[in-house]
Image (cartoon, rainbow, N blue to C red; front, side, top):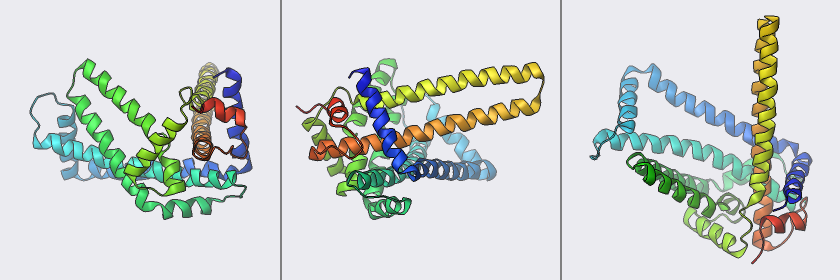
Length: 291
């Protein structure tokens, strides 16, 4: 894909987001919910002595080498599965809500946060099913990787990358079609086979811009911190750090929203051949080049 097409995809995704600025709240709510749940879980392990000792033993077991699988090994991977499941559910739920709103916009509607939450709630059964499956795959790959050498880990990473590509359209399929986890994966693969593009570069273009923006923020932050040290100002230093954190979080949140909007648009184009409102035919065909 030419650089111009990458810029067009980013610009068009941004134009859709500007029409529905409230969509930015979905990745924010996702982040807050994820942090709150995980902090609660790990706080329990820290505060409660029995859980603290049990959790430490499980973590030691997870990182231990050896051929035999002990009960602690099994329990450690069970704990990992629970953590994966919680993380995946939160992310999938709010991504489904955001994608649903984007699809409403592509149909000419004017979505609200309530519309997205309502649609995600209506797909709760499918979201839970997909969460359990994807968390299971993640846990299995992690378990195998822990017990393999360097070459084996490379193979597992390649398998993980293949799984990520195969399930690329699962969230929009859940949102729009309400299929179960297995059928959603099959549908995602079918859409990829139907319209296979140049590596789904649209996400890469958004990611590159995000990386470049974060790099600029970090460089600017380093300058501000150096200036604070030169001025010997603690208040200036705290302000620079807080500003940097806010800027980086803002970029991450916007990147997440743009990614889901682009994914929703790509799904609509791949599934129906219709160019979604806000995107051009050129940007869609460059991202997914129909066979």
